[in-house]
Length: 228
Image (cartoon, rainbow, N blue to C red; front, side):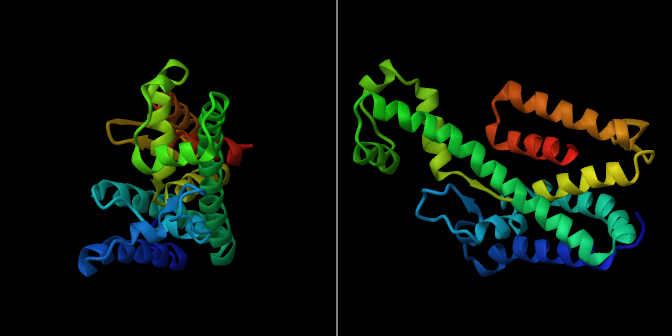
């Protein structure tokens, strides 16, 4: 770790600016820069990049832990890789995370969409459900309320944060410094990075799978991909 390297420093500054700007300007940047579902009218291709610099306005911990991770694991990587290679890796990880997130959501969304078509609904009927959030109770004979709720939430949901990029940096750190000792604050037992990172990853994915936090599972898929 040590002092901030140039790329890491500027990434943190940009993230902080984008976090504070909506509060100071009174303008909702989330709707423009967060990553929307591809068929949502608010979607834009630039969001695969810009969502990395947006964080939840409801939780300071979101940006705090992401920026801490960027500093703690990104600084040593930039020191050995250099600025350009580190930035290429960082943005590849972040954009890749957005692509995986979108692919997982699209797969789930399309499954429910096809099920609605199979019971006789037209694309116009389905769009009406998405526009109003209302549907005939007869649909529940075939499709569960939970699936319809997930269908609706996927369409209007957004992804924000540097988590995908930071997860990539975490994996990169594990490969570059496999014997570095890491520990959790609430479990202060030093463990080598080559063991600590996979264990942390598995615990996180298990937690998400049991609670069906599908918007988080893409982090696990990204981490698996980068590990391979």
